[in-house]
Length: 400
Image (cartoon, rainbow, N blue to C red; front, side, top):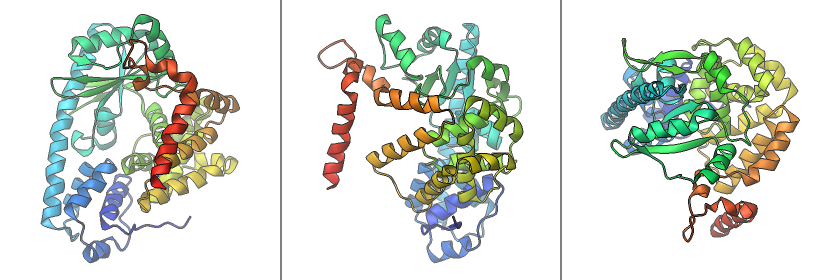
């Protein structure tokens, strides 16, 4: 695919340049001329940057490049939004430290990933990432105790199930959302890294054994347990692939790994990925970053690309969707994700597992009691295929 370095939108071109800066890649030739020719609209610039999780990084990029012809109003709008995110991130980091301490007092081992931990590991600052919630990973055996800790800390969840249903929920899903009424902090409690049908067989014990500690804040800040760089890269690649690499911030982090601006033993990463059948996730992330940011593809992944040429096809599609700002319809996104998930796992039995489990995959909303009964709507699972077909048929009909 020839590199389309500049999208037609000057707002997206600036956000893309900020993503390239994360990976240490200079802005493409023509960026300055494009911005002068089509000055970015302040509201549109904030909207595009926020949609890609890049608003704090864009603010830093504009501060480092005063020569760009971006209006004072646009710069002020981005700076104001960036300050709001920084204040929010400081609150989230403090809350994360508080929750980890509560888990430790209860004798529960928890790993923190994404959120403030990723901000510190990748950027070295809480001010450079757009954080929405906190993610905690615990051993499956500790889920019930972890819920009690969160409730004692002031958190609540909509998914409150009787014991006879709770075991089935934990077996068929991977996380449970909680929210604090005091400060509107959202916490996702994970006992698996991915849904059962999208298998990433990284055991909690192994991730914890290889784990490290990350200080969430300035020098002297409290450190929280987190996955190692090796596991973080794999988790990031799987997470980005699961969401079709639709946000530039995910691509920027992958590009930083590929450009070796982040510490990662690529030989060990590829070796571990092959052991668990996830090498194609790494390859897809690396090639998507290559097409969008022009970062080098690690030589360790060349062989995987030759074995599975479709990885380049999916990477090209993801890059074009981003550059052309093409938002897939709900049905098209579902179909593309199904195709990707059928092809990415390198083990045939995992593809079969996906085909069998995906149609019946339930969400937390499916477990909420029905309007006229205390029985969870999970009992509607046998007709889930008909529900999905009806849902997307209605959407397709409205478009016609």
